[in-house]
Image (cartoon, rainbow, N blue to C red; front, side, top):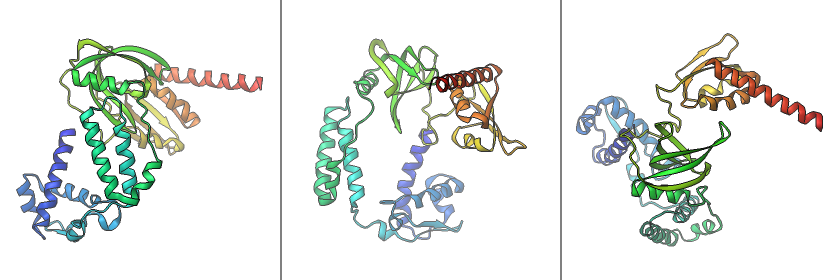
Length: 321
């Protein structure tokens, strides 16, 4: 859960200082000091070697354990003053300038960010030169980001006209916004009054947005940990069964699922859950001969009709060519 991820991050930051001052500390003693189990501590120690001042090999934490004691082999190297390489300075400056242009960013935050960017440019020197030739434009244009941010700040409900690519249609709905986040694209998590359920909306698919006078009153729900996957089905979501051939085994790697059973031909019978089963029609079309929807029957029939219509349209276009 999100709270656990935050707690673990805080704990690992403290763990770095603790281990630096106690070389060769015993696993049992460290676990007891942090009030966690030894298994939880070992899990933290598995993550720490992937942390450091950069992803260059010598800058990562060289920490390991033999199950009894913990050894940190390069504490002095990691503690050396941080110096940004040219690529790191460029990435940081481009990101900072991009964030500073976001609509809806509070003016005080924008000014603080610009001051920090100026200091970073001065510190980076020549390494900052390439960043001035690069720019990033966020997709949330037309004030959508600003309206969502304002709605969250003022606790107001929103009205949306939203495009659903799975159904190829625009729908109107009222939502109580919960938070903004970015996972490749920019999203709003909200309580949808149309479906009476939590939904995630991609901002570049919002065709129209309007702030309402009604207060935003989403129910008390636990925020999802987005570090695992943006799509996290609920146990209450409808169940879908898909059979794929050897060339469609990637589906089990890409889609969260309940089970994936081997088939005699080298394929898989995959059982998964989704709040919007109709969205899997596109997957069925993409799989072609390498897959088919087995259940529910109405979705299987719908996928077959979509495939037949796509084939007919293709044949018609070929005949006119």
